[in-house]
Image (cartoon, rainbow, N blue to C red):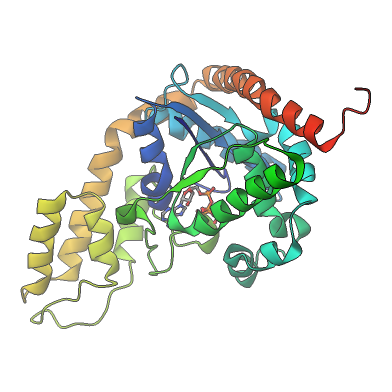
Length: 323
Ligand code: AQP
């Protein structure tokens, strides 16, 4: 099965990115054909500083490699190194109804948070559909926030196939309920552009500060604590198995639990969980040559896979006028 997913180098990667997508991608590489990429064209919708985009792209590549993505097993590349995706975006644009894009929540949410309401942001889901269809992906692991964009990609694949003849694979979303929406420190979806993230490779001091600043309710210590919608419970549970979650639930509903103690435990759990990866991450940060060569190699493999679908699409819409 061909599994594909991308991530924006639009800021430091966080627990939402990790549990919603990155960790699952690393696990999938064992038994599948994995395509994983850094969507820097997409990041242009919110990053307007060229040096920052360069740095964040390099950092995201190092993050993924440090977490165990194996460039010999998976195809791992940077989106803009295969610019053919922008051509497919144009082909798809002509069968994309405006109403379809107008219904997308992400555009409304992001503009409400102050991201400029550009044409690029509005047509973000078309570029994302092109990313998926260009590589013939069967399955796309994402967090719940991307569910609607996946539906757009499916819609466009079906519409294209109906209009021009069989061209694209219709992809399936792959959302894992336990990690569907990781909350940020303010209780909203954890998101780089909302400034509420817990970074996976934060230094100890800022990690502690972030965890200590998590918003909590004002339930008195000697009363049972709520589970539903409790940010501390939800974040801690990410690192626990079923038995661990049941035990944590018990602690929450037993009077006497102090949120401050739970925060300290969460800090330690996150720090210890990512410590071995962080070591590798620091090593890779100093080996720019290796990271760059790896990404270039990945782009060559991605380009070969893309050629199959792009050629088919060009032919089916009639751009091959010399035939
Ligand atoms: N809070 C989250 N819970 C679960 N999954 C999440 N993902 C992001 N946030 C959460 C998943 O991570 C993958 C990569 O996301 P992205 O960086 O490409 O874009 P995004 O979804 O828009 O993530 P951010 O952090 O919110 O980025 P900005 O703020 O720059 O837009 C996706 O699979 C996503 O579902």
